[in-house]
Length: 271
Image 1 (tube, helix red, strand yellow):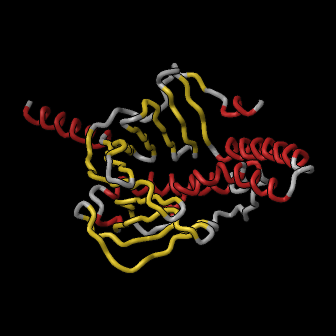
Image 2 (tube, rainbow, N blue to C red; image 1 turned 30 degrees about the horizontal axis):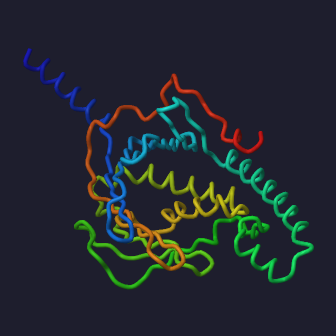
Image 3 (cartoon, rainbow, N blue to C red; image 1 turned 180 degrees about the vertical axis):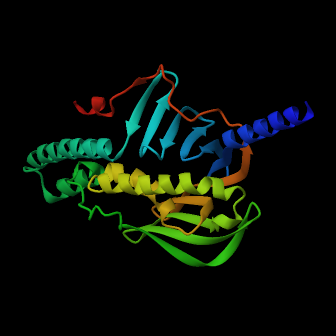
C-alpha cells in the first residue's frame, strides 16, 4: 500500500511538472516614471500568452502553427496574424494610400510651392510610402560599451537603430543567467523569428512596419532583454522592465476558446 501511494505521488509530481507554466511579469512606465500598466507573459512549451492590466484583450502566440491570435473576450472573437494575412493587409493599405496620394497630387496641381510644402508637412502619411529592401536588415542592433544591473541581473546594452535613428535600447542578460530561462528560450526565439517574418511581409508599408520593427529587435540581441526603453525622435517614450520569472500552474492550456468566432482582419479595409 505504501509503495502504491508513493507511486501515485510520483506520478502526480510528474504531472504537475509537465503542466507548469513560466510567468514573466513586467511593468511599463512613461518617460516620467509613471506606471502605465503591468503585464504577464505566460509560456508553456512553445506557446505564449500575453496579457496586460490595462486591456481585456490578450495575445496568444503558437510557435507550432507560426501564428499569433488577437483575442477579444468582450466580443468573444479573435483575429489571426501570420505572414500571409499581414502581407495582404499591407498590399491593401498601400493601394489605398496610393489612391489617396494620387488624389492629393491632383488637388495640389494648382497650388503654389509654399502651399504644397505646407500640405506635405501636415499630411505626411498621404505621401507615397518609402520602399524598403524587405529583408529585415533595416533594423540594426548595435552592442554598446558598459554594463548595468537590472533587478539583480548583470546586463549589457544594445541600441536598436533604423535608418540611423535610435528606436529602442535593450539591457540584455545571458540566457544562462535568467531564472528558468531554459524553459522560455524555445518559445521566445520562435516568437522572435515570427516577428522578423512579419516585418519582412510588411516592409514596404511604413504604417505597419513601424510596429513590426519595434518587436523584431528581440531576435537581434544575444540574450534576454530585462529592460527595454523605447524612443521617438531621440526622446524616451516608455520603458518596460521584467520584474519576476516564476513557475506556476498558469491559466491552463494556451489555446483560443472553442466558442469564440474568428474575425476577418481585412473587414476594415474594404474587403
